[in-house]
Image (cartoon, rainbow, N blue to C red):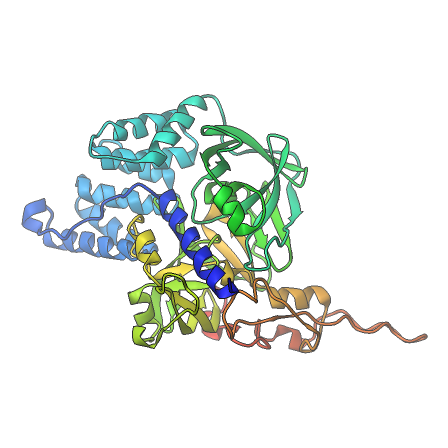
Amino acid sequence: MSLRSLLSRASASFLLPAACALSLSLAGCQETEPAKTGRDAVTNKWFQRASAEFETADVAEAKDSIDNALRGAPNDQEVKVLAAQIHLAMLDYAEAVRLLRDVKGSQAAAIRGRALWYKGDLEGAADELEAMLNDPDVVDDWAKSIAKLARRGAGRVPFSLTGGLLSAVEMPHVSAAAPFFVVPVEIDGEPALGLISTGYAEVVLDSQTRAEPSWVSMRFGGKLEVNDVPALTMDLSGLSKQVGAPIKAILGVNLLRHIHATIDFGGRQFVARSFSPPPPPDSTRVPLYYAKGGGMVMKTNLGQIAASMLIDTSMALPVALDDAGWKKAGVDLKELKLVPDDPEKKLKEGTIPLLKIGSYEISQVPGYYNDQVHIVEKKLAFNIDGMVGNGLLAYYRMTLGDGGRILWLEDNLAVQRLLSGVSQQPVGPRLTPPGEGLLPEGTPSVIVPEPPPPPEKGQKPPSSKPTPSDNAKPGSSNPAPKPQKDPSSKGQ
């Protein structure tokens, strides 16, 4: 089987679990006439605007709009439910619960239950989720498992951290086919490998090791220990075959937010912390929002048009777009070509002229198209334009800040040059980048500069201080996709 065929098989299998992890559908708000709601025309217009903005993951704008709607109709239940959804996406759990304090119904109970669960209020979460599950119209396996975990966890403090302030762990490169983000971790004292997957909300353990959801402890690097970690269970044998390593756990965003994680595949480093880190130098700031508190979503630009992307670090593809995403990118679907050797003859590929993430402008990005984005989208509260996977993210160092509300992104080439103290454009050997054999033609190689020769006798060693040329645009020597700093976005 060719590597490109392996890519098509792997990507489809990794997109679907992300959808399953976000199983509860929170209904969006349908357009309503002011006369039918009791809201005045201006308030109703703010409400409709907030609803449309939230649907496309314009969460910051949706908050401003819903605040105006709340001022006009502070007791309107529809307005309060939407406001609570927005605050949940912003990880503002207390406000989400406050807004729905007197609101009845399974939808309100679902939002309160999720907010209380992520807040660490186990008893309150169990009460709300069980109340929601009493509605015969609701089917939610996630809520069933979480409600049971919450009841069993009475007296626990989820994700309590002990040991060192931080722990740096080497990330093994387990596959020659794709850059899977794998981390060594101890689970209840037993060594294991975990796969980082931002498409999952929770930690998931292999059902061969645990028959049902349970509370576990996790230790990184023998130093930092995370106690009382809630973990669901699933058969991970198929995942292990795909990755090419015995994966015993999926590490979801709820854990990653609590340990303020840094993921650096190119540098083979994973860092877990007990504190929120300061902004890394030369990084770009990317605000994050969470579909139903769990699915990691960011705002980007496809060309000059704003777009919403789900970040899924278990997806082998660099970027996958739906119809609307390709249209925003300025590419006609007719221009896309079938991926050779795709057994289902459905996966198509093309090139995204420009993708902007934070202040990085990345040109000529390999992109893909099939129905998987639509499958994921149906499970989210957001209408996304696509997904960003580890095929692109492997070239960046990622750090979660402010409890997961911020993603600090650093171009790995710039980081390597900084660490090496190189003052000139790198001319060293081209090394095989993460999963290069798997990615399409045009994906950049990582250039690692050769170390300077040792000084001759009697000569001073070359200065390691960066010169002005070290401040060149990140990735400016890379072939496409090429990350660049956007001067108009300085300070983002």
